[in-house]
Amino acid sequence: MIWLLFLSLLDPRYHTAGEVAYELDSIARDHSNITRLDTIGYSSFDSVPLFALKISDNPLENEDEPEILYIGCHHAEEILGIEICMYMISELTSKYTTDPTINDWVNNREIWFVPLMNPDGHSVVMAPPETTWRDTTWRDNKRDNNNNGFFELAYDGVDLNRNYDFYWTEGGSTDPSSEFYKGPYSFSENETRAIRDLALANNFTFCITYHSARYGLTEVVYFPWDWEGGYSPDFPCIRTIADSISKRIIKDSGIGYYTALPGQGLDGRARNWLYGVCGIFTYCIEVGTTTIPPGWMVDDICQRNLPGAYYLLERVSESGISGCIYDSLTGEPLSAEIIIHSYYDPNLPPRRSDSKYGRFLRMLKPGTYDIEIRKTGYVSVHFNDMQIIEGQMNEFDILMARTGGELPAVIPQKKIKVRPNPSSNYVLIEMDDGMELTSLSVYDVTGRLVKNFQNPDRTMFWQGLDEQNREVAEGIYWLLGKNDDNQTVQKIVLIRSSVNR
Ligand SMILES: [Zn+2]
Image 1 (tube, rainbow, N blue to C red):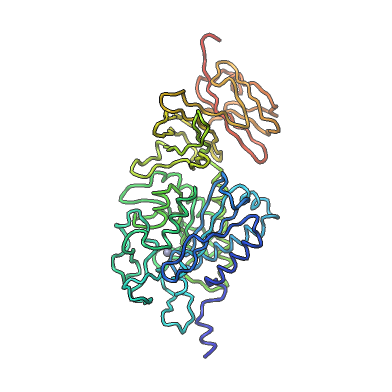
Image 2: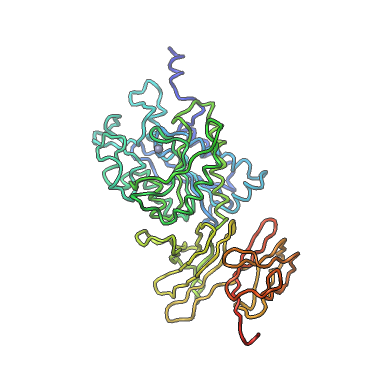
């Protein structure tokens, strides 16, 4: 009898809510230099704390660093996401001093985890076998839908992944006894409000929400969105990144990789709200081939998922644009709207730089973009045909002038100075003190290599000639400098003035 009871418990490899809390607390105390444990809310029924752990150097400060969020367990029975988050937390903190890659991520990113978003529902799944309200297929939280003061499997609970305020009316069920019940109104649940407030208070570039499907396809990376023939505005870039995540995660079978698919339907799900409202590129990963696999498989599933999760920590500094926006008179950081013209939907909330640093960070595919920086009361700043090179973060700061004031200006890139710029006959290229480059090249706006400088010096001239010493055409060029751990891009505007010919 005792043996039978023991068999029907979930494998002890799976964390209980108490074990999650205990482990987060010990990790936060053992690694207080790089962690901050926050309570971001309390669960809707049992009022237990909803924990978020931030991993970064100077964890108490909101530094000017890219931010990434990982969430586990929207759906109570989809417990693999908790394990992946806890595995990652353990690895990032324990290898911080020994693994240079992890050290770099922790020092230069703000990495957030909400491993167990739905502790109430999770307690239904993890309850001892004799408990009358135990259900290992429970999906929802424990909202008391019929207001009778206690929790019942037949009537209660809200599907947290249908409760977000983005096309909330379109999805889920209005029947409180349905496991897809969307709640009485959007953001009716403490759990979804906690995620909302965390997302609005920070400046996340990426998010992964982990699921493990009981319905539908398994081993899939879903991304926003393909809805009634309409794609999310950043679709081409979001899809490319989803492909890169999925092809880094080996399937349970050991053969092949996860599949990236656009999410169908806009219906109160986390990924669509996080992307649609906050602009966060959010991926919903359906982990594993069964919702709750045997305990011995868990470590292996976590390990196979890590490359997909870690890819985002790298991607955040690759192809895209980044910089800070300031008021040209006061130097104050500005929260301004960044419009990428080919990736723009005027019906979505504006994508803004943050107000603390004026920082913008947008992921882009390699290509040519028209970019506009807009703020009421300021002269808009336009960049036409900005070239994004594979793997390069195009960094530039922007000064915005109040309307009626001086013209806007772009602050020169800090690591390489180019002058005069625009230039009519030669360009003087100077590197900042301490900057050593292993290569320096000029590309045209189509990404074609025009000129490669061998063994670049601190100071050099480019006379507007290509490798065959032919004069290149008037126009915009990109100077790309690289060394072992850095790359920097500077724009050169070349004007062919008749006076100099
Ligand atoms: Zn799910």
